[in-house]
Length: 124
Length: 108
Image (cartoon, chains in turn yellow, brown):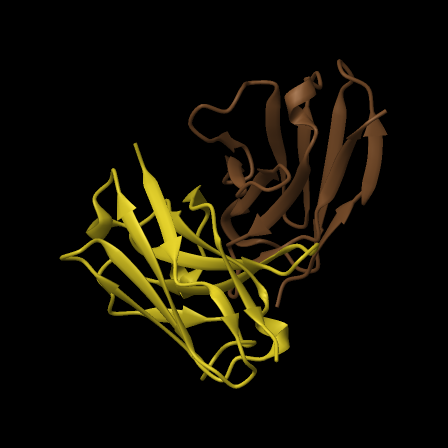
Protein backbone atom coordinates (compact mmCIF):
# COMPACT_ATOMS: atom_id res chain seq x y z
CA UNK A 1 0.00 0.00 0.00
CA UNK A 2 1.33 3.40 -0.99
CA UNK A 3 1.76 5.72 1.99
CA UNK A 4 2.94 9.32 2.09
CA UNK A 5 3.33 10.94 5.49
CA UNK A 6 4.17 14.62 5.74
CA UNK A 7 5.77 16.29 8.75
CA UNK A 8 7.41 19.55 9.74
CA UNK A 9 4.51 21.96 9.55
CA UNK A 10 3.68 24.48 12.25
CA UNK A 11 3.49 28.14 13.17
CA UNK A 12 6.32 30.29 11.87
CA UNK A 13 6.92 34.03 11.91
CA UNK A 14 7.08 36.00 8.66
CA UNK A 15 10.54 35.85 7.15
CA UNK A 16 11.28 32.54 8.83
CA UNK A 17 12.22 29.15 7.44
CA UNK A 18 10.68 25.72 7.68
CA UNK A 19 11.59 22.29 6.35
CA UNK A 20 8.83 19.88 5.40
CA UNK A 21 9.46 16.17 5.00
CA UNK A 22 7.49 13.41 3.32
CA UNK A 23 8.15 9.78 4.22
CA UNK A 24 7.20 7.44 1.40
CA UNK A 25 6.52 3.71 1.51
CA UNK A 26 4.78 0.99 -0.48
CA UNK A 27 6.34 1.75 -3.86
CA UNK A 28 9.73 2.12 -5.53
CA UNK A 29 10.49 5.65 -4.37
CA UNK A 30 13.40 6.14 -6.75
CA UNK A 31 11.27 5.39 -9.81
CA UNK A 32 8.76 8.21 -9.63
CA UNK A 33 8.77 11.99 -9.70
CA UNK A 34 7.38 13.58 -6.55
CA UNK A 35 5.54 16.85 -6.02
CA UNK A 36 4.24 19.27 -3.42
CA UNK A 37 0.84 20.89 -3.81
CA UNK A 38 -0.58 23.39 -1.32
CA UNK A 39 -4.04 24.56 -0.39
CA UNK A 40 -4.64 27.82 1.44
CA UNK A 41 -7.51 27.74 3.96
CA UNK A 42 -10.83 27.54 2.11
CA UNK A 43 -9.12 27.82 -1.28
CA UNK A 44 -8.22 25.60 -4.20
CA UNK A 45 -5.12 23.60 -5.06
CA UNK A 46 -1.83 25.21 -6.11
CA UNK A 47 1.14 23.28 -7.48
CA UNK A 48 4.35 24.20 -5.65
CA UNK A 49 7.23 22.03 -6.82
CA UNK A 50 8.26 18.77 -8.53
CA UNK A 51 11.44 16.72 -8.45
CA UNK A 52 12.36 14.06 -10.98
CA UNK A 53 12.83 10.43 -10.00
CA UNK A 54 16.61 10.79 -10.04
CA UNK A 55 16.57 14.09 -8.20
CA UNK A 56 18.51 15.75 -11.03
CA UNK A 57 15.71 18.09 -12.04
CA UNK A 58 13.52 20.33 -9.91
CA UNK A 59 10.72 22.66 -10.90
CA UNK A 60 9.02 25.43 -8.96
CA UNK A 61 5.98 27.64 -9.24
CA UNK A 62 6.85 31.28 -9.83
CA UNK A 63 5.31 32.13 -6.45
CA UNK A 64 8.02 30.17 -4.59
CA UNK A 65 10.95 30.22 -7.01
CA UNK A 66 14.14 31.40 -5.33
CA UNK A 67 12.72 30.81 -1.84
CA UNK A 68 11.96 27.06 -1.82
CA UNK A 69 14.24 24.14 -2.60
CA UNK A 70 13.29 20.49 -3.08
CA UNK A 71 15.41 17.40 -2.55
CA UNK A 72 14.97 13.69 -2.13
CA UNK A 73 16.89 11.06 -0.18
CA UNK A 74 16.45 7.72 -1.91
CA UNK A 75 18.29 5.88 0.88
CA UNK A 76 15.58 6.87 3.37
CA UNK A 77 12.66 7.25 0.92
CA UNK A 78 12.13 10.82 2.04
CA UNK A 79 11.29 14.05 0.25
CA UNK A 80 12.30 17.41 1.72
CA UNK A 81 10.91 20.87 0.96
CA UNK A 82 13.03 23.70 2.37
CA UNK A 83 11.01 26.89 2.62
CA UNK A 84 12.74 30.23 3.26
CA UNK A 85 11.57 33.83 3.50
CA UNK A 86 8.07 32.73 4.35
CA UNK A 87 5.18 35.16 4.12
CA UNK A 88 1.49 35.11 5.01
CA UNK A 89 0.71 34.03 1.43
CA UNK A 90 2.50 30.74 2.14
CA UNK A 91 -0.02 29.75 4.81
CA UNK A 92 -1.58 26.51 3.59
CA UNK A 93 -1.86 22.78 3.97
CA UNK A 94 1.07 21.29 2.08
CA UNK A 95 0.46 17.94 0.40
CA UNK A 96 3.16 15.55 -0.78
CA UNK A 97 2.07 13.65 -3.88
CA UNK A 98 3.44 10.86 -6.04
CA UNK A 99 3.52 11.34 -9.78
CA UNK A 100 2.40 8.59 -12.14
CA UNK A 101 5.68 8.87 -14.04
CA UNK A 102 9.38 8.97 -13.34
CA UNK A 103 9.90 12.04 -15.46
CA UNK A 104 7.44 14.88 -15.85
CA UNK A 105 8.08 17.28 -18.69
CA UNK A 106 8.44 20.74 -17.23
CA UNK A 107 7.57 19.27 -13.86
CA UNK A 108 3.99 18.58 -14.94
CA UNK A 109 2.42 15.24 -14.02
CA UNK A 110 -0.81 13.73 -12.84
CA UNK A 111 -0.62 12.79 -9.15
CA UNK A 112 -1.94 9.39 -8.20
CA UNK A 113 -1.28 9.26 -4.45
CA UNK A 114 -1.39 12.05 -1.89
CA UNK A 115 -0.45 12.34 1.76
CA UNK A 116 -2.82 13.80 4.34
CA UNK A 117 -0.98 17.10 4.40
CA UNK A 118 0.79 19.26 6.96
CA UNK A 119 -0.37 22.74 7.92
CA UNK A 120 2.01 25.68 7.67
CA UNK A 121 0.86 28.90 9.30
CA UNK A 122 2.90 32.05 8.79
CA UNK A 123 1.92 34.66 11.32
CA UNK A 124 3.42 36.96 13.92
CA UNK B 1 0.30 29.85 -17.88
CA UNK B 2 -2.79 27.85 -18.78
CA UNK B 3 -5.82 29.01 -16.82
CA UNK B 4 -8.51 26.41 -16.14
CA UNK B 5 -12.06 27.61 -15.58
CA UNK B 6 -14.49 25.14 -14.04
CA UNK B 7 -18.24 25.39 -14.19
CA UNK B 8 -20.54 25.45 -12.44
CA UNK B 9 -18.95 26.77 -9.26
CA UNK B 10 -21.42 25.19 -6.89
CA UNK B 11 -24.56 23.31 -7.69
CA UNK B 12 -26.97 21.01 -5.92
CA UNK B 13 -27.99 17.63 -7.22
CA UNK B 14 -30.02 14.70 -5.92
CA UNK B 15 -28.65 11.18 -5.49
CA UNK B 16 -29.19 9.18 -8.64
CA UNK B 17 -28.90 12.17 -10.98
CA UNK B 18 -26.46 12.41 -13.87
CA UNK B 19 -23.91 15.19 -13.35
CA UNK B 20 -21.68 16.87 -15.92
CA UNK B 21 -18.81 19.09 -14.80
CA UNK B 22 -16.93 21.32 -17.21
CA UNK B 23 -13.29 22.41 -17.33
CA UNK B 24 -12.24 24.93 -19.97
CA UNK B 25 -8.60 25.81 -20.65
CA UNK B 26 -7.30 29.18 -21.81
CA UNK B 27 -5.11 27.38 -24.38
CA UNK B 28 -5.01 23.92 -25.83
CA UNK B 29 -3.82 21.23 -23.40
CA UNK B 30 -1.08 19.15 -25.01
CA UNK B 31 -1.58 15.40 -25.35
CA UNK B 32 -4.97 15.59 -23.55
CA UNK B 33 -3.03 15.69 -20.28
CA UNK B 34 -6.02 16.62 -18.16
CA UNK B 35 -6.80 15.04 -14.78
CA UNK B 36 -9.74 15.19 -12.41
CA UNK B 37 -9.54 14.95 -8.62
CA UNK B 38 -12.16 14.54 -5.91
CA UNK B 39 -11.68 16.16 -2.50
CA UNK B 40 -13.90 15.63 0.53
CA UNK B 41 -13.76 17.90 3.60
CA UNK B 42 -10.64 17.34 5.67
CA UNK B 43 -9.20 14.87 3.18
CA UNK B 44 -6.49 14.91 0.55
CA UNK B 45 -7.46 15.00 -3.13
CA UNK B 46 -8.01 11.66 -4.87
CA UNK B 47 -7.14 11.07 -8.51
CA UNK B 48 -10.20 10.02 -10.53
CA UNK B 49 -9.23 10.48 -14.17
CA UNK B 50 -5.98 11.14 -16.03
CA UNK B 51 -5.18 11.60 -19.69
CA UNK B 52 -8.65 13.14 -20.06
CA UNK B 53 -10.45 9.78 -20.13
CA UNK B 54 -8.50 7.07 -18.27
CA UNK B 55 -9.95 6.08 -14.91
CA UNK B 56 -7.50 5.76 -12.05
CA UNK B 57 -7.16 2.49 -10.17
CA UNK B 58 -10.19 1.65 -8.01
CA UNK B 59 -12.39 4.44 -9.36
CA UNK B 60 -15.99 3.33 -9.99
CA UNK B 61 -17.08 3.21 -13.62
CA UNK B 62 -19.86 5.76 -12.99
CA UNK B 63 -17.05 8.34 -13.33
CA UNK B 64 -15.97 9.11 -16.88
CA UNK B 65 -13.89 11.82 -18.50
CA UNK B 66 -13.88 13.18 -22.01
CA UNK B 67 -12.67 16.09 -24.10
CA UNK B 68 -9.65 17.46 -25.89
CA UNK B 69 -8.05 20.75 -26.82
CA UNK B 70 -9.57 23.33 -24.49
CA UNK B 71 -12.83 21.66 -23.40
CA UNK B 72 -13.04 18.77 -20.97
CA UNK B 73 -15.84 17.11 -19.06
CA UNK B 74 -16.23 14.85 -16.05
CA UNK B 75 -19.48 12.92 -15.95
CA UNK B 76 -20.92 11.05 -12.97
CA UNK B 77 -23.57 8.81 -14.47
CA UNK B 78 -25.54 8.33 -11.27
CA UNK B 79 -24.70 10.30 -8.13
CA UNK B 80 -24.09 8.25 -5.02
CA UNK B 81 -24.14 9.76 -1.49
CA UNK B 82 -20.35 9.42 -1.24
CA UNK B 83 -19.83 11.52 -4.40
CA UNK B 84 -20.75 14.81 -2.76
CA UNK B 85 -17.42 16.64 -2.72
CA UNK B 86 -15.34 19.26 -4.53
CA UNK B 87 -13.94 18.30 -7.94
CA UNK B 88 -10.80 19.85 -9.42
CA UNK B 89 -9.39 19.58 -12.91
CA UNK B 90 -5.65 19.81 -13.49
CA UNK B 91 -3.76 20.24 -16.74
CA UNK B 92 -0.26 18.82 -16.95
CA UNK B 93 0.28 19.08 -20.67
CA UNK B 94 1.63 22.61 -20.50
CA UNK B 95 4.17 24.02 -18.09
CA UNK B 96 3.50 25.03 -15.40
CA UNK B 97 0.79 22.56 -14.44
CA UNK B 98 -2.31 24.32 -13.15
CA UNK B 99 -5.54 23.50 -11.34
CA UNK B 100 -9.05 24.77 -11.84
CA UNK B 101 -10.80 26.57 -9.01
CA UNK B 102 -13.06 23.59 -8.29
CA UNK B 103 -16.73 22.65 -8.56
CA UNK B 104 -18.63 21.81 -5.39
CA UNK B 105 -21.24 19.09 -5.75
CA UNK B 106 -23.82 19.54 -3.00
CA UNK B 107 -26.83 17.53 -1.97
CA UNK B 108 -30.14 19.02 -3.07
